[in-house]
Image (cartoon, one colour):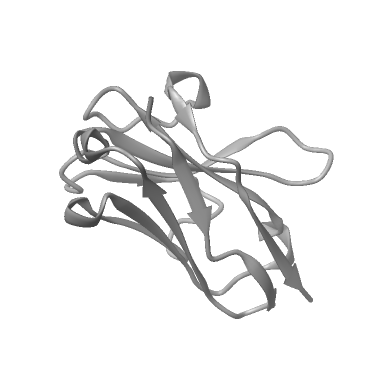
Length: 124
């Protein structure tokens, strides 16, 4: 069972930046694809970004493309989400998830392990 812990959330002004981290408890995390999802108040959980095991393949939701960057450090069992040019629409709880496969996917249903989430609030 892989345990995931997100950190780095907080309150930021529109136009600002935050970097989220997702730390895993197991070294097997380094062979799994990882995704970031988010859920705004009153809305469904939605895909934000994903990265393959090696980090060579990434994918982003259109709403964050060009502003967010996902990366990973397998030696540290950690995945990051650098968020720039933040907008009020980015306000949400951000969740890290991993799947028992090296292939990145955008559907939440294909992920096996989830963190508890970290809150991001963007003030306008």
